[in-house]
Image 1 (cartoon, rainbow, N blue to C red):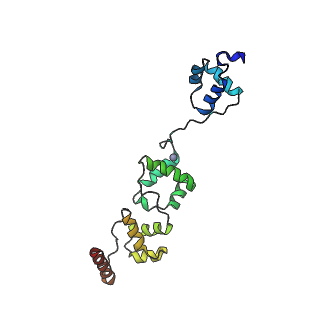
Image 2: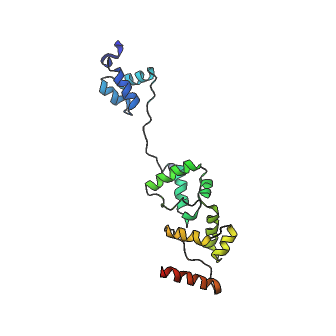
Image 3: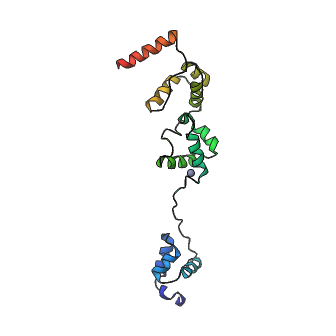
Length: 186
Ligand SMILES: [Zn+2]
């Protein structure tokens, strides 16, 4: 023990410092009056495993985060389903959620992005945004019983669902008019 000189009797403290803090060898050496090299050698000799310093997630250097930001900038990106996003970034759901949460916490993606679970709804919306089909027809095409209520739910959540491109006429129009009328009365 002699060779540790001033360290003598403080080994336990140093072990603690090495195992429980992320202080650099130099700082610990200063604390115990030995050189950085001495602390390093001691640590190695004792087979100490140092804790990994928690490092902030570098979203700018993370390919998952960058990909997610890129996707989130697409028009109507909240209508892209999680399934599609996972495929595009090539990550598991757990991984995806971790990076997405980091981006949300830092305000780098919209809160609404990455919340759509239904692949059918995604398909339905893709048609809805491009084609002048009735909501009912779109629902039939993609296998959603009541696409109207899906749209309604998303509008209530604050999603930006533009008006339908379909020129409603005849019975459909009067049905919608009466629905709007009913809503107004509520
Ligand atoms: Zn990331």
